[in-house]
Amino acid sequence: MSVIPVYNCFHPVLKKKTEPVTEIDDSLVKLVNDMFETMHKAEGIGLAANQVGVSKSLLVVDIGFFNEKYTGPPILMINPVITDFSDEIYEYEEGCLSIPNVRDIVERPKMIQVSYFDLDMKEKLIEADNLLSRVVQHEIDHLNGILFYERLTPLRKTLLKSKLKKIEKGQYETDYPMVLPDGTLLQPKK
Ligand code: NI
Image (tube, rainbow, N blue to C red; front, side, top):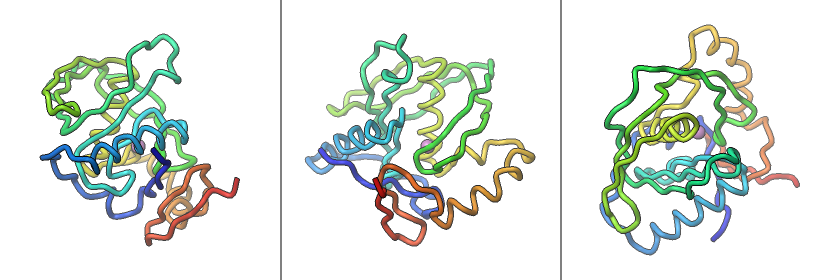
């Protein structure tokens, strides 16, 4: 397992809808392991494959270290689809490894039902609420080429403009390697 670079939100791979996974092979298993390691190293709680430059529909989630009350295992979701969501909406502050230094309030449904495949290509259907629901929705947005700041109110979006410009130019440092919009790899200084 190794830490692999995270792609900056202005890289085109993050604006493109990902392709479904059709086959589980060794390279996919390696990708999944590397994604878990990268997410943990970067202290993220979710990571989508296109955030590490692979335009395939899969994501990893681990809210365990962030939420002590949560005792569930880390989760891999292949070809995830939201099949139902609650009318109840709630606000929560989100961040993203591809969008360093930005946190903002996003409204999303409180509960979702999501279907996906595991590494044995067995279909699963789970209900998720609160933080798990939040992270899965954020990551599925990634798989569809949507970034969380696109879900902000127009005013909040305007307030972020100069920060986003800096991110586009790679002017924020991260403590994990990052691929900038032009493909340059930025290594952490520490
Ligand atoms: Ni994200």
